[in-house]
Image 1 (cartoon, rainbow, N blue to C red):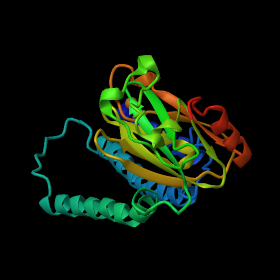
Image 2: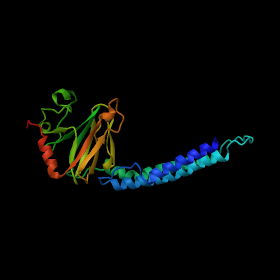
Image 3: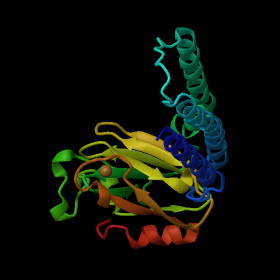
Image 4: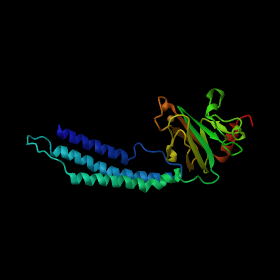
Length: 264
Ligand SMILES: [Cu+2]
């Protein structure tokens, strides 16, 4: 039995290593300025963890095989405190080190301010749908009021009709952006925590009720990319998805104009 178990662990280890090495299931190519740095850091983490995984699993298989029951007398072991202390601190140093090493990539998208002139889009999460708001020709996102939020009259975000800046705001169920231009997305939630994630941008950020979380990026490839909600937000979470449409500058201007509200 021990021999079978040791063999099974070895086979599972080798198959897992193979799948990662030939990249059987892999990320789509990146389209943002963070892609290269993120992918490099991801590979570094994967290689380090892969080597540790490989050695640990083979060690386990070896121990199962070597110390299998052959009718010998059982020897009781208290373990080894020194070894435990060494590998626990080594793990801590390794993981905290990887986080510190990679944190500047994260900070570029999440903490640094968006470049001046970035296209602003407000992204709203709501169980279980997305809304995206553009400032309109005046370049200003108008006031919103929670008490005015009403889907049935076409005002899901509670745009305030008394604020002139709100009147030209464009509200859409998909997010369109121009290619090769900096975009700032302001993330807000109407109810619970949601998560805005686009694999191709290598970006992921929570939408937290009461906060305005900002991220920025420049998309370099025209196309249509999935935007799933990446935070389990309730029963309908699985259907909370929309698309990021990266367009040429001209197509984007047209799209905004076509979807502008009638009352101006
Ligand atoms: Cu959600």
